[in-house]
Length: 211
Image (cartoon, rainbow, N blue to C red; front, side, top):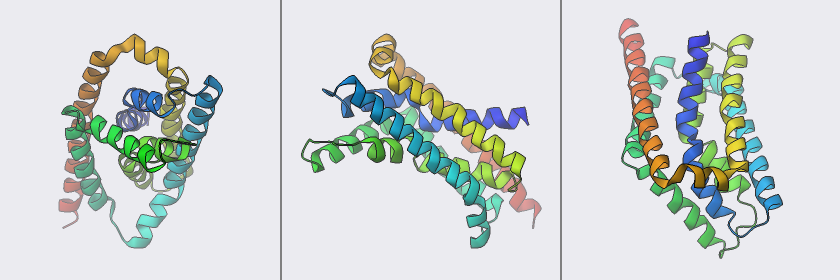
């Protein structure tokens, strides 16, 4: 159980990528008072946590209603995570995130009144990758109360430190520097790639075993 929990935390940590969020968060809240930045960080993180927990609780039932087998979802989810890993290793994900945030800011005429919902909560924290991973974890738990509890623990183990980093974003970014942040992003991308391949292998084994 502990091994499974650690695997879930690692996967979500890599997908949410709190360090990669720092520069984007600083850009979204630039020139705003500290109280405003705190409010955006707290509201955005809480909303993202709610979204991920909702998918953890109801996502498995939704897949069951659609008749999607866990092995098929493992393979599809693994392929999607593999694409995200490729983007992280070659720094494409950070560029895409920045472009998305800038585009949103431009559409609103430069007046980003409340970026906590979009783009911070969705899709930066609770993005497609994190939601896919949570659905996988939920399906693997077979909907048991204990299994879902561990999935929720994994979500909180990632979103709470993310909130702490966002609350101290400026100081942490200055301390780490751009070079170290990019290096860590690439390292996390390699880890995510390995986890994605494992999802695909597990799904393929289950699918072939069912034939």
